[in-house]
Length: 306
Image (cartoon, rainbow, N blue to C red; front, side, top):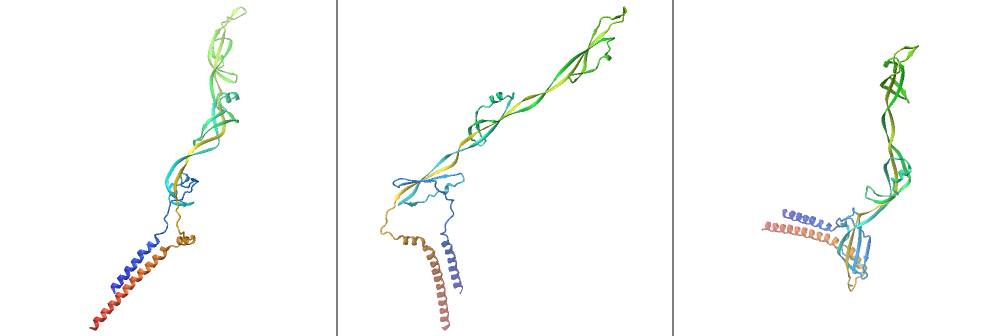
């Protein structure tokens, strides 16, 4: 009995081992297919070129390399060439310029602005742009101030003595307050009254000083727009040229009917034969087990009769 169970287990294991082999014939994953942008065939059909223009995101592994048949020729890949393609890109662009100016009159301003200027954008595009006169603006860049000393003199005549108490310590001059800085005493002729001398008289020439602060424009800022077309040549695509060699397909006589060939291609014999083989093998194993079991029973019965 043990031998029978062992044999059945072996048959079952063999059946399980053969089953995955029937499923292993399925398709495998491939790279994403690339499609040609152009196809060129020679007049005699012996050469065919397929052009593929791929972006950096495309994988060239997706270019088909297998043999194929077309127009009575069998084509085989002989070479795959790679070539960088320049791509021309252009667009409208406006560039704003800003520059300093000492004057604000338009003549001086336009002398700073040429009619056309060459520009290169941040992303590498280049072009000649034209000045737009309607965008020219002149604005004050800022103010500054300066301070200077202001002086004024005042005379105070016919003073009895050189006493500063008679001299004002500050004065107002053109809206500014000036302070006493210096006094120059001058002696007048001796005055008399009724023939009697009354002593010297003095004139005080007082100097007053102060400061005056004024503001002025430091300069001007000129802004203007230049507009036009900028362009560049960028290597953003790669061209692959697949070259196939073609050989005429020799006719085969007699030619089978197309429907028969089509049926043969569609019918998968392996899918039918492999399961039948598995079942036959399993049946043979089970039959051998039954035969062995019956033989054992006969031998045991014969021994008992003796």
